[in-house]
Amino acid sequence: MPISVRHVDPALLVLEKPAGLLSVPGRGPDKQDCLSARVQQQYPDAQIVHRLDMATSGLMLMARGAQALSILNRAFANRQIDKRYQALICGRPACNDSPWQVIDLPIAVDWPNRPRRVIAADGKPSLTRWRLVDTAHPAMTRIDLEPVTGRSHQLRVHLQAIGHPIVGDALYGSDDEAARADRLMLHATHIRLHHPLSGELLAFASEPAF
Image (cartoon, rainbow, N blue to C red; front, top):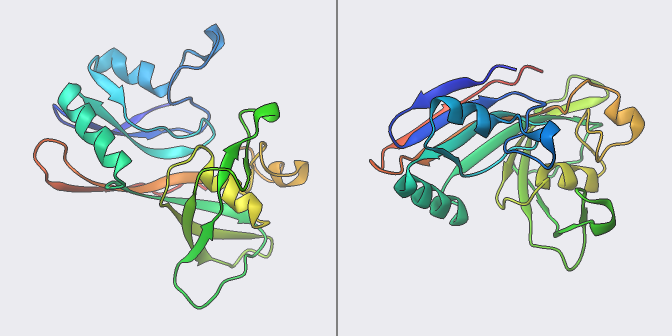
């Protein structure tokens, strides 16, 4: 699975992760191959600042050096880095007149069934914005997604919660919904940030393969 390097400088790497590749090592010797390990073979100072699920493809950042890592971690914590995703979801979701729809549902770990997450009253506040992109297919809808918060599996859990799981989602969709595609139809399409050292505004875009 090739990793495309979209941008490289002494403080920052912008990469495209393929679907099916871990962002960081997992538990066990069979889960050591991942994006961070591969990138560090060429850029030993590269460090993870955020993650994509193994099944998700698209744009990811890595910091180079302690200063850049600290600045980017703080930017993510303060929601100063804008990310957008595109997904194919099952069915046709209802919309109001606003250009962007909102899912505001708290998410908690489903401890007996980890790594699954669930909607729970005592979960962490979680907010997702989404909008329609293409409704031509009778059984699926293409949407853009903007996670305002950054909970694990947030987009997948929120879409399942409103009755429209992502096509190909074997973790949150039914067997039929998961079988509609050979991968999770979720791709990180846009990322915008201020460069951690220069402050220059940077924006990157990536089209999904589905």
